[in-house]
Image (cartoon, rainbow, N blue to C red; front, side):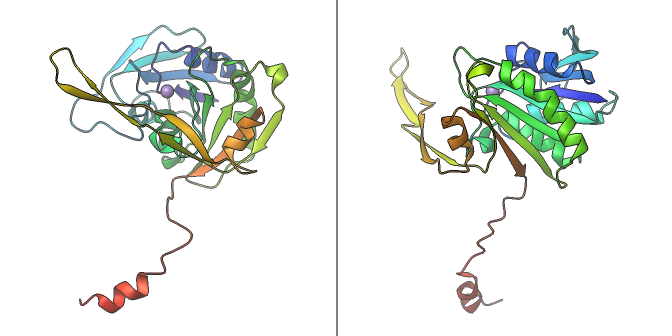
Length: 253
Ligand code: MN
C-alpha cells in the first residue's frame, strides 16, 4: 500500500513527522506538504501561478516534497502528477482542533476532502491544542484507522475527520463516532494600529461551544475521548426550504 501524507502546518511541522512515523509501518509513504504554514486556507486551490515540487529528505518516507501550493493542491500534485498513485491519503497530524464548523476553514480537513473527491480513501487527524501538542495518540490510532477504512470503505465522497484530546494515551477515555457540533467564535476581529498610526485588523478569537450535545465531536473531546466524524462534501441542507412555493408564486419567468 502507498499512502500520500500531507498537512496544512507545513513540511517542518512535528505533526507531519508523527503521522509519517505512525503510518510507515503499514505502507510506503510519499509526503507532499506545503512549504510553509497554510492553516485555515480551507479548500483553496492554485490556478494562477505555477506549482512546484521540491524534493526534501524526510525520515520514514520513501520520497518527500515540499510545495508552494495549498493542502488541496498537495493532494492533487501527490495523486495526479507523475508520482506513484496513492491508495490512501492521510492529512495531519494538525496542531489544533478541527471541530464543528472549523472543518470548513481547515486546510487539514480540506486535503482529506480533496482526496475523497478523487475517490481516494482518506482521513484528517488533529490534536485539540495549539500549545504543548501531544501527537502520540493520533500517531498510534492513524494506522489502525487506515486499515479499518481499507476494510470498511466509506460511501463515495466521504472521509473521516479524527480529533484527539491533547492528553497522554493513558488518560484517553475511549473513541466515539460523532457528528459535527458547533463552535461559534467570539471577538473574532481585533483592530490595532501599526507604528505609523494606520489601522490594521487581525482575525482570531476564541471558540465558544454552542452545540456540544451528546453525540457531537466537541462533546467527545470534552469527555477526553477521541472523536471520529464521517464527513461528506455534500453541504445540501436536508431540511429543504419551505419558502420555495412562495418564491415560485412570485417569480414570473
Ligand atoms: Mn494547521
